[in-house]
Image 1 (cartoon, rainbow, N blue to C red):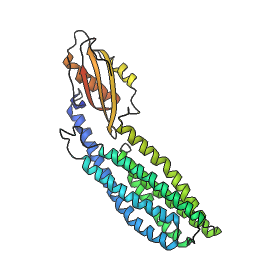
Image 2 (cartoon, rainbow, N blue to C red):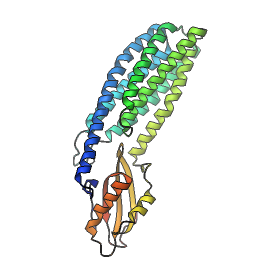
Image 3 (tube, one colour):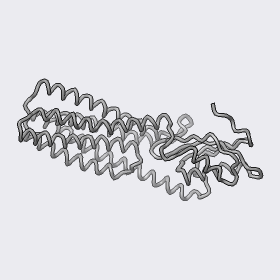
Image 4 (cartoon, rainbow, N blue to C red):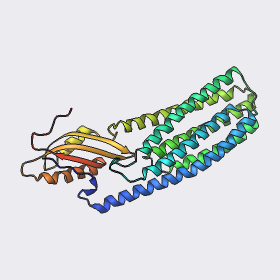
Length: 313
């Protein structure tokens, strides 16, 4: 005896609530896509300005940050493409849809940040060995413009949905640019006051180290999603204990949950009915409980005869 339910949208609270939530999620995603598009244009335009300013002033901090912003523009473009692909309808071959393309984009963004950090450190070491003249005045002017652009971009993205990993990855890239601008300003001021051009590569390395932590966190979170790790807000033992409190459930085992993308949690579970309970009523009840109390977006519930829940491999 088995019974599956494909979607928590069928639970007892009705369709109106679920359709409204889905419509809200679509609106949030569209708004986040627009935010990334705006910041993409800002980032690409300023990257060109910063590259020219870094070349004219001889500043590694500006050149490194320009390279960072070019990488970020590419990452933002990738994130934008990921939103477009994720909107594609599910197919028989891709039954959960293309939402995880956004997770892949977040992973790519984190990986490129780590590669960029390596390049900045390499260039800084070269500058230590072979110092070059740095024109602090032009460097400071370009860095201040960059700071304004990056602060605006960061605030635009921060206003989006914090549960969107794709948007979060884009925001981390812009945050890295913001820190790069701060470092460039500090280096320019320091060089103007002391004449120590070595401050330029030193602050470049410090900014790079700050970026590493965020980039690694993004990579780790993306990989955890891709290997279908249990979401942090779900305690499997607590979920099973909660399902056992349902009046028609005699036994609940083999609960598994993972993240499809962002906050969309998917789960499977085996249950057995109590004596006198209609087995066909359990999938709706269990899916409703998982949705209401544990935030499960999509549940598959298998109903087994008493004592017949199979052992897990």
